[in-house]
Image 1 (cartoon, rainbow, N blue to C red):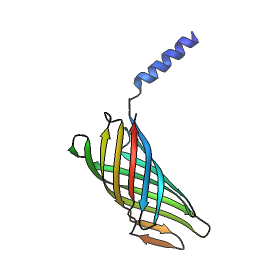
Image 2: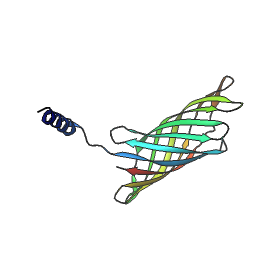
Image 3: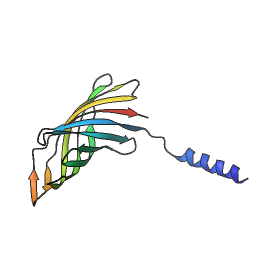
Image 4: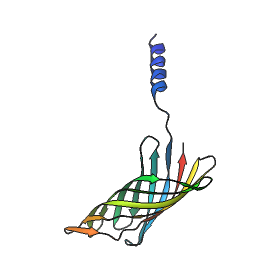
Amino acid sequence: MKKLLSVLAVLFVLGTVNVFAIGVGPQGGWNPALKGGNGALSLKLDNVPCYFAVSATFQDPITIGLTADWWIKNPKIEGTWGYYYGVGGAGAVTLGSDVATIFVGGRALIGTNVKLLDNFIEIYLQAAWEPGIAIHNGIVPVFNYFPIDLGLRFWF
């Protein structure tokens, strides 16, 4: 009887859960102001309005970053090819042998994307402007961060 009640409870919970999609994949980036690249993991949950990316550089200094982007529009150019623009936030922590910096800022972005294989694969290229502040020997305003990212997301 306990097994039957357990199965019915699981089926009840599964029946009330909203079905959602998840997009996840690798992303590579370049920031000319920092003269360096990074690797990232992008994530999009269907029920959450933001696209997230966690990035890292593993050289001296090491930087771990997080971005959250809200796409305002994603109009189609043709078929499954479109472009998007939006706003978001960015943060990063940099630690090295002679540096420790925290960055917090906003983002304005524009990009293009194409979905392939019945929307299973999404390829995108985007550029952003990240004005903000860096905390390193005081608070320093930053206006010259312009990261460029190329990524691939798989939708499940």
